[in-house]
Length: 334
Image 1 (cartoon, rainbow, N blue to C red):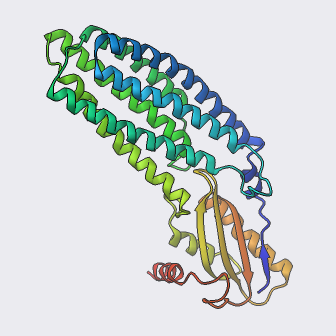
Image 2 (image 1 turned 180 degrees about the vertical axis):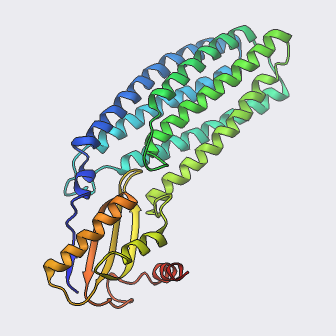
Image 3 (image 1 turned 90 degrees about the vertical axis):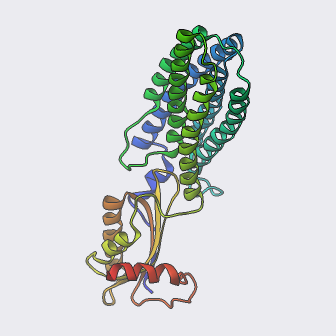
């Protein structure tokens, strides 16, 4: 065994996220979330008051979504601020997981709210109360415009396909409310035009609730995958293994593990067998070559490589993930 290489030119700036582009991106996100928070606070106040006046479950359920938006956006805002904190001796990887916890909590909130809306909708389908369609239509349209504007403010383009889960959870809240408001507005227009069809109000809430719950469940699964140290979404572990093995000076790669610290910060650890018996300096050159390759091709910010002259024993300390290794080699052979 030659060296345990922990130096990483790419990773440490990304892990601290205290300056440069990482900090600037975080500040922009904080500003967007704050604007969306203010917009939703105004919307939810109007919807609760006028929803009670109009006796509309559609408006009240939409207000419920907006109320969770206020809490969710506040949670996301706190998470963005916390994630900028520098790593400490107790938190050596920093606070990146705070954004994942916020995404998980937001998705769970949406699912719980959907259960309540479903119960209320079924109750009102059985015994529909009178609904003021005119008030419903006007308030829902205002809420739709406000939620759409907030969603556009929060929405951001990303380079990883999946994007930051914390921002995705905030966007999901806002998009779902924009759709809910549009559905409620359509129901209000129909009720206003016909003077009836009051069952359409809870029915629209029910259908939109199911749609939102589907996306919330997917977001919850994605955040759980990060917390359970799963392979980052969209990353082919077999392809990564093959690319690392093809780097000049590398004989073999094993005990390979990749996980996410957050939606945008990936980490890797691996044992890399070096060709021949190089000096420590020569081995470090190969290690740096591997790190530059995986950083550019797989967006892996932090890599810890154990450099070896010979493959360590599969059942030895720190080298006992036989199942993963067997699958990787099988995939590479194909």
